[in-house]
Length: 78
Image (tube, rainbow, N blue to C red; front, side, top):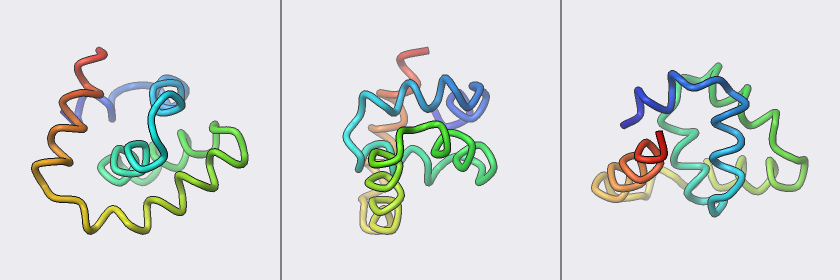
């Protein structure tokens, strides 16, 4: 599912993640190529971007099955 999101323009990724919880957005960004994740993060409003960036530091503890479920749900939008 991550290849689908990685292929989207950064603006679409940011728009998709804007509606998600910061933790979900963080998991998604952690699975994207660094450059694409940085572009999308830069497009989020300041406070929102700060919360998502902070949540990225905690994504290592998310179970792989949950990461896959998040990816399928987000990719299912496209």
